[in-house]
Amino acid sequence: MKKHTFILDDDFEDESPLLDDISILFFQTDTPNYLFADDLNHLYRLALARTDDIPILDTTWPLYTYHDSISHLCYYLIERPLTSTKILLIRGEGLDDTVARILRDFNEPPVDTDPLNPDLQRHNEIILSYQQALTSVTQYNSQPSTPLSRKAAKDRQELDNLLTSILDHLDLNHL
Image (cartoon, rainbow, N blue to C red; front, side, top):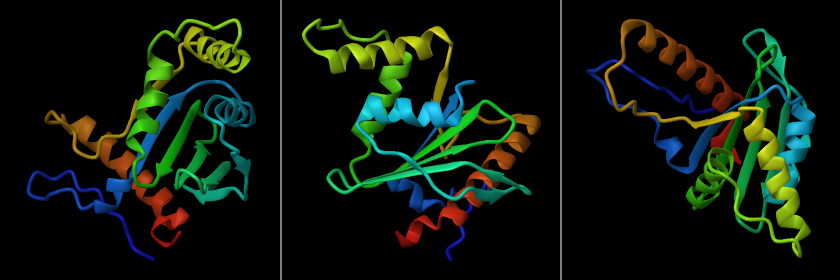
């Protein structure tokens, strides 16, 4: 199994070429994981399904997966226990449009509702409910653009270690 490393020391470059075809999104929402997975399924025509929990940091984390054979994208939704954080990993070539759409949907007002398009109406209702609940969505950037303070660098290293554990557990090199 290949180990993925994220190094923040100024003397080293990021050693994560695997992240070229993986995007990581963080959602902060109190919505239970099974409802959140269902909403993502409705929003993006996915079929996220619960699989075996994954053991990370001495506890188990709920995992939902979906492999889209048409767009050649794989989705992994993980909920960090006892927090409101959900992590969505998307893997595949050409994932940029999908990630941009998700970020746009959660961070911008929805498009006008077409009364003749119930799918668009449902999409907008779901997005509006998350926006009204102040759900934040951020994308992981493996190369921070500004120098980090010592505390921020320590927090970042902990995040990188967590993501390394998740990537290693999911063994994304061998799909």
